[in-house]
Length: 250
Ligand code: SF4
Ligand code: FES
Picture 1 (cartoon, rainbow, N blue to C red):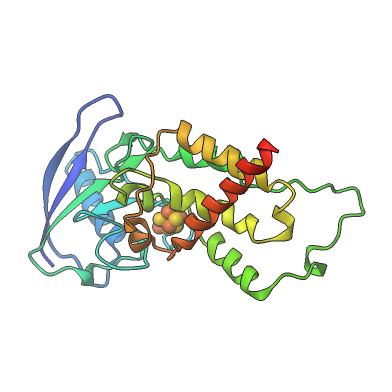
Picture 2 (tube, rainbow, N blue to C red):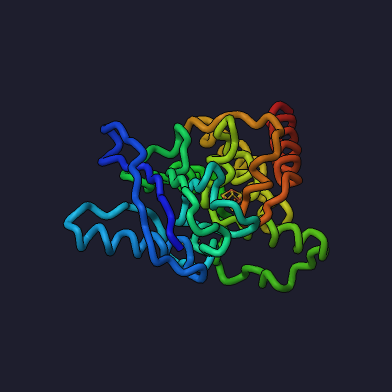
């Protein structure tokens, strides 16, 4: 395949970036999108040019590191896949492909296609955990009965990989889908009940402090999420938040 890549290049967070054209040839339709970028970077290195910086780690849809906006869509044109799972057969020979970083105020560009998503870590640190007293009398988690529907919904919420596609896709740069998945995975289980009130209040407070926008129910996040995280989680987080506010006023 012969392609024209239009890639966002930016030296660092302080300098202005711009789209740069990179014609590329000899790309196999069976390559992954990141392998195609590897080919480009090998060529750039051979020519003595600076390779394009982009994030990746597992390359199998698990870690959430790969974060490209491809032809105006987070993780590209395929559904329910991350950028590393996207294959070049989704494009046509001769295509022009626009490749940009995930853009949001809370995700500043570090270099080229790499953004700083540590805002997500700080939201997680604010409440995305349970505290367990390991005194020796701790009950085995497997001995606590949990309704199948709740276990399934908690598991689905826990599949969020923290990639940030929901934020990048949202016109308000809202992180509600991400935060609601992290709140839901605990809210649905008895182990999460003890700290439920503080968790939702603290995580939402941190989300707002990081500069993410508000949710206006456009639903774009759910469409572009590579893990199919449902908007139901946002409704659940709103209920949890309402309950926490009411109980803190009692
Ligand atoms: S909710 Fe989906 S899009 Fe958002 S961070 Fe989690 S996996 Fe990525
Ligand atoms: S590189 Fe890990 S999800 Fe894509």
